[in-house]
Length: 466
Ligand code: MN
Ligand code: MN
Image (cartoon, rainbow, N blue to C red):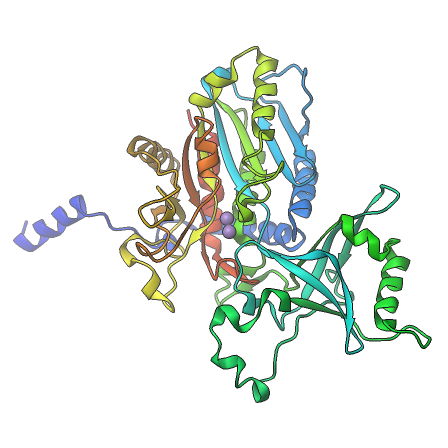
């Protein structure tokens, strides 16, 4: 062997050099990837809120043989169960061959996404135009939400106690909404402002109507709008007080790029991982350890509330399952393994200054595993231990899952978190992994199809661990 070849061989042996995912798969897998992503696009397009994501997941789960789990049910290996938490989060399980005191395998994603919620009293008229006032939910750049098509989705609980569903803007012939912006001709002052102040929170008001009600009185446009809503949904202005109405982008989910290799859409964070978990739990047989799939709510505001991952709804589910097998839930937690399936940051060549290239996920390099998230000196992160990373690494290697390690941007650049800390608090070994995203939290986010498919394959491999 020549000296040059020998050093090359040594490099090959000793260096770590990740490959582009498309160099790692065959034609068969490429077709599977396309098919998987078509199904994901269809799910995302009609799952614009946490409620819709949960309702659509339940419909697919039932079609795949899942039944509601009630305490006292006798559990058999292979049983497929689910429990809806107030229609806003969802827990599913496939009972494993081993008893639950040998642990379960959890994948936890969230189905809420950044958006604009209507205020309790949102409706007003100004300049003979009608508007709905909003209060943003989650981390957004406010300037991204003006001059784009918007839809209104949610529920209103009427005075009678009846709850009605509201969806305006999803059907092709439905009207949509918009928040206006200043024309460049008159924006000299606005353009001098900081990006955070260009659009104010109190300026995120939805253009909702312009035709006055017949007559001479004040607020005739507002009257016309509320009377149209009353005709269609039976609501009065007071009913907004007990409503949960979410303003979401009105874009279709579309392929991106001439090679159609990416998907643009609203709410990839984190429905892209939620869908991967769902499909994975549908596609496994009877696992060794019980597989648990979580679609959580309220992650974007800190996993709070009865439907967020800080709620004991999760313990309630696991403890009910353990009780059905007559085992101690505490033994279950300490032997369980949780993949906190949430999106990570894809390296964006347009903004290289915020990432450290060597330690940042790239599109088409597979599932992004995050040992830690957090901010500054790893503050408030789960930080999985070496053994846990090693365990996941082995599972992925054995199943041919293409994956990459990633950080949340440069040190001291910013930070963030996931549900991982709340799973770990339950004495469950936990690690973060998910799909790299471009323009995260924007009204139209981008992911690579390859990474979506590998995340599905990765969750499935975790569920199928021995
Ligand atoms: Mn997320
Ligand atoms: Mn997020």
